[in-house]
Length: 83
Length: 226
Image (cartoon, rainbow over all chains, first blue to last red; front, side):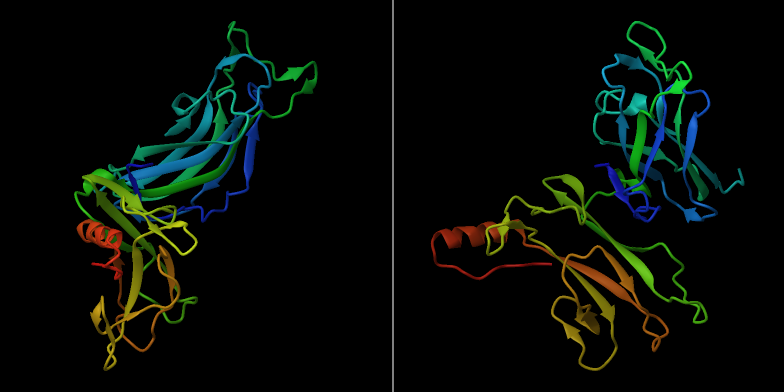
């Protein structure tokens, strides 16, 4: 984030400081868990979005070497040509 | 967009404590952002070094969850590269017009300071807990403190209002220095309410001069400049 100038502050108003979300790796019944939705907003003329979070992955002594997990961020918006 | 294990610093499968990760995304193509949605996800494709799949249950008994995310923050802004010198910005992300029938009338204003030190730009904020120049300042207990002061001012057109730094008709807001986010209660007696910020910090040449004089034990006054 050293190259980022934060112009809005945390959009969640710091509501996740002590909140924790979890998943069980490879459990096909739980591939995602909802974290946050901004609702209907109107943020104009920002060029960069910055995301920070703490991650923890407890596989005990298992020799896990591959797999994907993380945050999926969907941003909806408009361009001047209406796209 | 993903902040994924493939982006993470360290070994993303063996973070035994909360491990901070961060990522920037380019949203310059969007003139307006209308919604942001965030989910914690996995692809259920975890494998051991020998290629076998990681088990998630023993018989009918599922294991405890083993992937966690916490302390989530999301921000909008711009890249530091758009700046080429010291810049101070005062930002309000809410509508600047008040409706008197809508309460509360308060607004939050954010100060952002991009500061150039030895041809390098950096953002100074409330997390900057040391001097921004090499010439460190110390308080009476010998603890490093910032050698700059952030002053907030509100326009006041009353006769005789004057501030040494801000000039005529600017009144310094009370409270401590070096506040970066400030809640403003509007002055209902004026049509337009104005605010500004001045950052006061020593010019290095004068600071060095100050140190040299101190070394000679012949100089005690502090220099400051805007």
